[in-house]
Image (tube, rainbow over all chains, first blue to last red):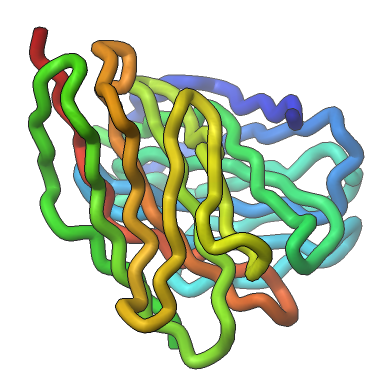
Length: 114
Length: 114
């Protein structure tokens, strides 16, 4: 089982502030993902990474940006938070491909923008 | 394109009763199928996955799911519900080739009464 951590778990912040959501995993997984989940809704992929210096946008358009400078670290940044960014953000990681690949999820960050 | 439909946003059962959570998928290529569980204020935990081996897949906590290609279904079952099973359950599909991009259903909240 992968160990994947997200901080902070909860964040309440005012409009216009810059925020960074942290995600780290200790299993050496090459692939990492960010999902956005609104209450009672499905998860939507907003960013993913194949490895260091690789980042791609997911299916759901997002104003956030990500970086992957180290294998274990995949932070998500919002330059100017808005109330529409209020949501839960889940980070995941995986290794390998095909039938062996399984995504492991962190506990999530609940973001409230006032 | 792939999609997942979970019938019933809420399912209520009594402790000891059969649990049946429905999932139908749409995929243009052979799919991989997953069931994840999300407990309150936590991330997603993998219950089980289908990767084209046995059509009856056994997972953790006594859950199992059967892949039925003719019905494009992957329903989750458990013979006897326990209070600790109360949670949100998500079905997800990914293609079996290339990048594993999970597409999630909207989730089913399982309520277990004593």
